[in-house]
Length: 182
Image 1: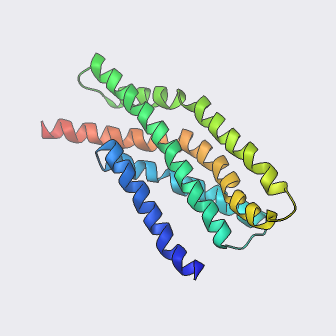
Image 2: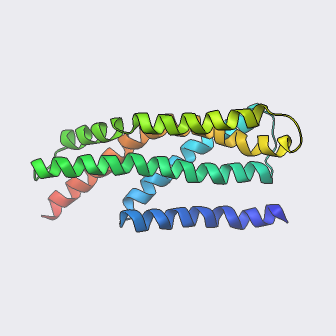
């Protein structure tokens, strides 16, 4: 019964995350880019579950659901600061070229390195004792913590390196399309 419920809960959770992102950004592009951070997190989560020899279970699925929320939050932080850098650059220049956009992307993403690294470190440091713990309930808790620990490692690295580049390319494409429509 739990597996059947998870087949409903996981897509609904992802849909709710997407809708919240849409209402936050008021466009479709940014939420789609932020949702890319979730597969970045899943990579590390699946590797950690595999390396520890855990089977996919309800507890592991709960860990992945929590990981999806945290990874979306990290994606929002990265994109928000990139957008702020873009707006500041637009105040200085009316038309932005590809170099200007990528400069703003680099500036916005680099401003978020420390806070994102601190968030990931705090989450990992908080979950490692749970992963190494023993005693009553530890088997379930380890399976919740494992995907989060692995996922936090990959989402931190990939969201700070790959996500800004993807978003920069999307912004460049949007800028070119705006120029052609004018």
